[in-house]
Image (cartoon, rainbow, N blue to C red; front, side, top):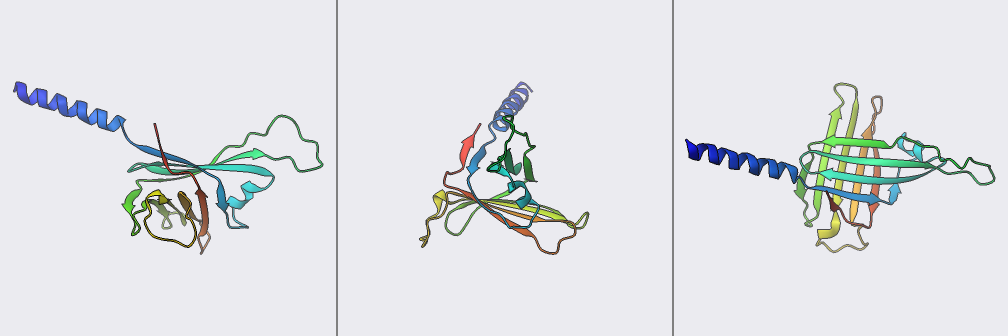
Length: 170
């Protein structure tokens, strides 16, 4: 009986240590290919936008856009910056797999088309381990954000990328 209790305690300590060491990856995105005329393109009007991706395998993927007000030329603007809420898209329980060229891919989707007609799909590709030859240099991190609204037949497809690789964050 004593051995069972000791083994159970060791298993619980090991599980709690493993749960606290969940790996998470982060990259700042600096290149945007946003479809014009979409909801997402409206946040780029009169503002400077930065973006970041956060990947926690088996939990979620989040893409966040951070806006700061950009004063148009020739106008007097207040010195106090206008604070905007970040725009964030999140999908839960992403799948992690290795592509044909050994690139690491995280992919997740929230499909609510039967409920309200919307769908969000996020694919994060880490090209730092890619072994295939290409004509053009690939960015270290690519994010494909697909959004479909409730009354939309076609999904918006936005591609974000960065020359920095996904780095582990604590």
